[in-house]
Structure formats: structure tokens, C-alpha cells
Image (cartoon, rainbow, N blue to C red; front, top):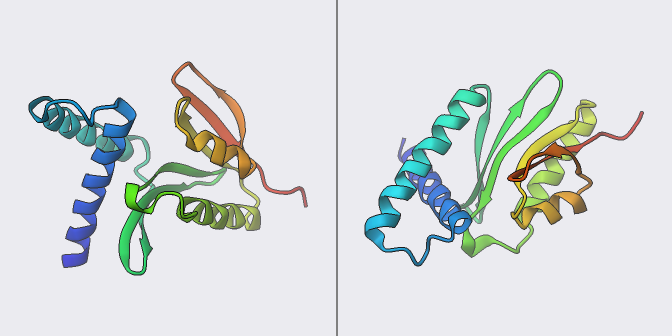
Length: 152
């Protein structure tokens, strides 16, 4: 149970770190930043539970240390990469790339597309494109992207 508690605390901090980056909130006064990050964290987790009740969370580890988090929904018609985040101290080491490539290999073996949505300003868009994802739609805030398995 201790590791699960540690994992939950890690995910909480990681989501808040990610949201802080997304909002550019690092320089905001703590009195404003703390409550806002808490609201954003709660909203993100509620959105995951409500929209992807079938999703499986996974802690990404480097040498046993929690380094990132992803959430995957394996569905009949698709594999959905619901969320992925890597802690600042582990970024740039290929952790997300390797895990996504494993997910693509899994999708290829079961002949399912992998779909995701990503903020239009998120630098991960370039990673997804390098890995073979293509934009399939979206709006001014988010891109919808898809990777398709090789034709058999």
C-alpha cells in the first residue's frame, strides 16, 4: 500500500507541475497558484474518471524511481493515449518516446489505431508527428491525432 500512496502523491505533484507549465504559473504568487493548481488537478482527475472509466494508469520508472505517468484506454476500436507526462528532471531522455513506441507496437499487433488529443502549443506535437501520428481534426486549442497500424 505504501507504493500506491507514493504513486498517488507523485501523480498529484506531476499533474500540478504539468498544469503549472501549461498555464505559465511558475511565477504566480503561491496564494493564487496553490488553489488554482488544486482546482486544475481535481478537474483533470475527474475528467479522466468521467471520460475514460476504462483507462489504466501507469507509472513510468527510471531505476525504480517514479519519472512519469501515462493513462491508456484499450477499447474495441482503438487504443487511446489519454494522458502522458514526464517529470522535469527526466525529460529529454526518451522515456515518453520509448513507452509510446511500445504502445504502437502493441497497437500494431492487434491492428488498432492509437488516438490522442494534445494542446496545439504543446511541444509533444512534434514528438507525436515524429512517431507517425497524423492530425485528424481538432479546434483552436487541441489537435486530435491518430497513428494507424501497418496494412497487413
